[in-house]
Image (cartoon, rainbow, N blue to C red; front, side, top):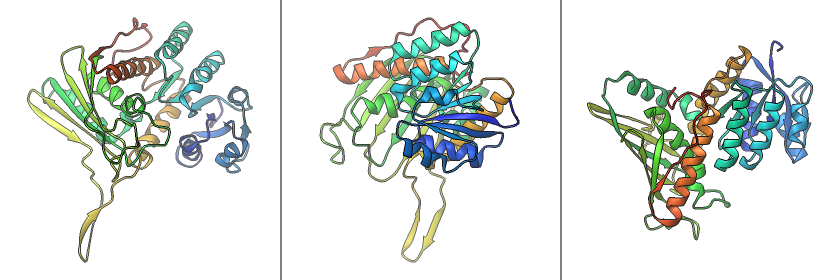
Length: 341
């Protein structure tokens, strides 16, 4: 491995282009070696003339480009399985954006392929684990000062949803972050899901069940509820309150700058996740680069990606038929730690 970790970025959409910028301008110890996107112009635009980096239309070709020592996958979810397996075949460490693989069967194939290697190569992009507020809440819960966690109350709001968004995507795209955060914060697997649907908001597109109220049960009796509202119209908000036997703790209270001027006072409300979690993304990629350069793999694992897919599928079943859906996970290979570690 050279002085700078050569990274191939797969996908040059909004997320991929932001990661190219982050690797080139923010994170030390790495360089962009290649970018792949089916749209050649978009790949070249994301590169922006970075010296020594190549643009590709084929993801696998980018993995074989000169100087590539690691892979950051930011392509659409359906392309992730092929890219992950190709990276594994080449022994390349991977940071893969969520969902690791959209369907649980494909996610399990990735887990089994990595387990056959006998070592971890993949870190999955659940960036909330790198957010400073989430980190403090995790430390507080692990320290035990508030006693056993009984409930998590979560809020996930977006200004508006993309045109292609479906009712199921409120769970398998938006709430997937809460799924991982709950497993990590509580150190427990989620065992069942119930989804309630209030009357749709007038701001929701025709046919979209928005908002939704999602209730998760855990293996040791805690409850996690999530209000997901992807067309709230005013801002991007993510909040979480842990209620424990001896106290509670709440994060995400919009600690933004308050501006006072003639006629009143106000504060900015983030409009999307790239603003709210900008620092978390920086921390995540920096941690991945640092660990990879040391020959280590840390952070959310392929098992975490698989578990999130299974829970999300159960949530979609619960949404579709209105009944409580149980979560059935495959046996966890010894390669992977229990939730929360």
